[in-house]
Image (cartoon, rainbow, N blue to C red; front, side, top):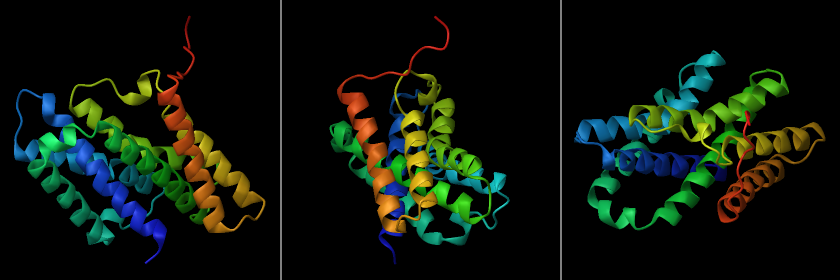
Length: 202
């Protein structure tokens, strides 16, 4: 079992928690709604990527461990709800590590399926952010990519970093870790110093 796979499972678990917590401000909350939102948050991006790449079976269908990770995230949220709400910074770091990991995993998978590097970068970004976009729409929130936060931009930078390192023959683990750390660094610095993406219309 590779470290990348272990981290992917942890990222799935973290996204399930963030998806379940997204229901906290909804007027009509129930187990099914929270569970469904958690599920979509965790597998939405990867599912969209695999459908667009015509890659079957879908990753969460072929690997039951992913379903178990989501179920564990839902259960942990239900049991430790109040405690988790006080760990926003910790959850932010989990979310950041999750998008970093899924960006590179998605980019690498797309490359292995033979698509062009430009398309691989887009698939990496989809893997990382589309689950969250669907979650925000379901909970009547403005999707994070439509806010001024540096989010998808960090994923794009990381995907490009990975593609460049791969192009020059860098060792896989080195490229994987370096590109993931770049995403994490950009995201953390952006929040710390309140960096924003420039407005399109002024």
